[in-house]
Length: 218
Image 1 (cartoon, rainbow, N blue to C red):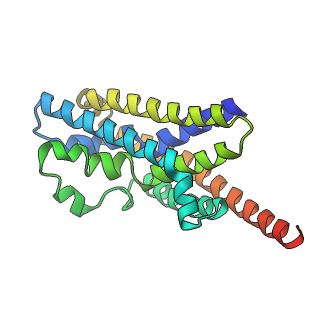
Image 2: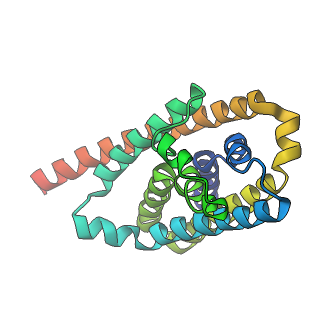
Image 3: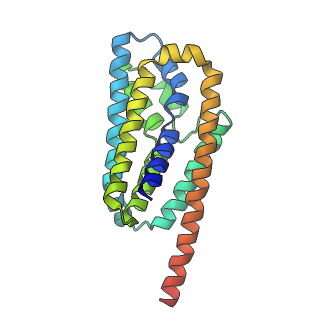
């Protein structure tokens, strides 16, 4: 169970963060930047992404209890959000949940673009936050809770490391694969993400039905 969980967590987090699909946007936003300035922006992106996803992984359950959110409800809502992001990815569109035209217009302040809009919401957007929180809720119910929780944090770290490497070499990568190549990869990731989203929704629906009947006859 733990290996399958770890593999699923990494694949899903990597797909929703989508560093390869974000390369064209990174190149567009940082056009004209010096190599040193690009490095600073990349470090900010990675720091913000790690920090935001770690915070929601650690305090996600507390947020659930504070607002009275049930796990099935969050799975269904999260699955719908992920599916909308996946749908946009499969059609080569930029999801509005990730970055808006206003965000892009405000991205003129050099280094700050590493925090907004690239760090949030491009890399650590609502979809990534939702994904992490759902996997944490699954890990909390597991008999291998400690190992599963650890695998979530490792998945985040691995995704950020890969993102750092891809962004560091984004110029030659972008020249080689071009916009169409990045778009094709994004569509493949979107298909994977859509399947995961549907699984989240079905799991949430079945769990909600089960909890309802348990409460009714329990």
